[in-house]
Length: 268
Image (tube, rainbow, N blue to C red; front, side, top):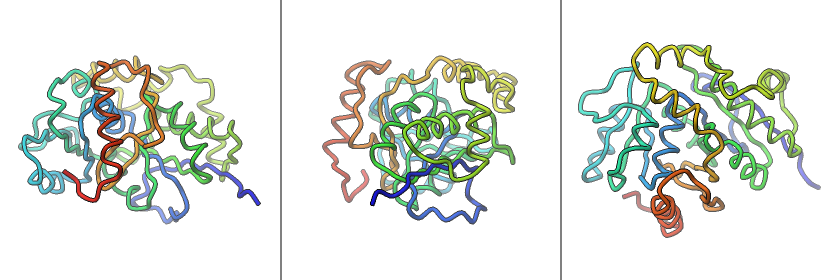
């Protein structure tokens, strides 16, 4: 007998009693952690999302020439080189440097979900391929948006809803009325429908419009699913990365490295 396939949308689960067992989970923090992490890996860079600055500092001791990236409360932590910026990750050329990424909410969400098992990272860049990957490989999916300052923000609602809508079109049943409500709200929305978000206001008020422009101009351009494994974000083994808007050798190197590791025991 074929089990029923279901999908649900939720906010950050740190204080939620929802059981995660049996779910494939997706962490969504469009502005900016999930977009930054996915972009970094797509260029061929290794990426390790961590929940805290302390965790980042501890992990950094395991690498040489590491790139510490991120923000806490919008501020660059002491000793960090670059903020949580997808534009920065797309334009840097030092892809041989592994990146340790920390953010106020998105990387904490990633770390929380990875403890459950199959955990993915989604954003507008790869949402369409991610739908296909999830539908092919899982029967229960929980899409989780990062909650920032107590808000499940518009960009994350929209991305979560689009992923859930795609799964529903593939035969998944929404588990709750709230999932259906969010899908209905964002179905068919234009790309810029989330511009009322407080995240957008923050980027504009702090002179970081390049990241906003990057998000708006990169929809469905990555044909890969990105999965958390042993603390690292990697291209899921079933994925391919053709037709990417990046230098071809970066894309090829990212895929070859993922295949050659074959889920190793060690990290570096």
